Image (cartoon, rainbow, N blue to C red; front, side, top):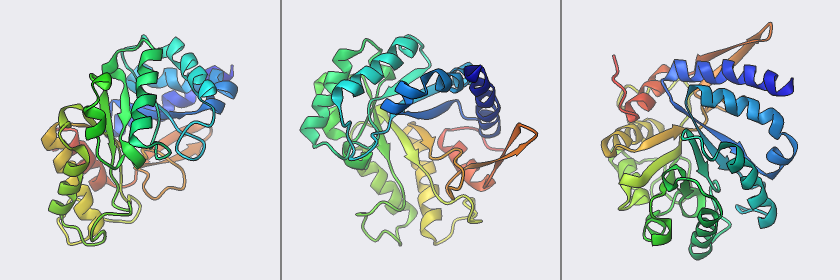
Length: 274
């Protein structure tokens, strides 16, 4: 019954999310506790999403940018792969923002993951170094990881970018170019986003950092033909959330928080805009 209830909620939320945005993919977090304690419930929401499109299963380490116990980590993934590994609409992101690893150890972790599970490599998404915001070239250069997709995250608030509060559209485009490196044909931008509840109009070119960032990201992602996932599509209390929800008599209604932001996201996907 709990599974069915979760599935019904998932149908309401994910169905509206896809209908309102034109998206075909949702990225869902998992960790050891999710699978150990809530799997029968969570699979209801997952199954609802797979009825409508694709699901990226993404492992969020509880802390420190790496699993605390690799045995439990691989056991968790075994459960997920056993249930969804043969589904062609299932994609697997072994770890989100793996800042707890150096380059060598991260590549070895990815290789261990790939040799442990019999899933198509094209359905595996490997996050770049650190917060997935550094170069992905070291991953693409590793022949053991050939055939996988490579993930990049890019936000305007990330520390370390030069002149962070005064970058032009060209400047932001160049930053994404550096992150992607020479593997644009394998790249998915699995996280990018900006304030959506601030009243900013992203359809109008203006000398403001968040607007420059969104416009640059949208154009660059479209130009290279990469996939992209906005973060977050729906998250209560998050100013970046693209959608907000209202619950009335157990019915959930979603509403777009910023139509101009949605338009730019859709343009990044190459959707025709009317």
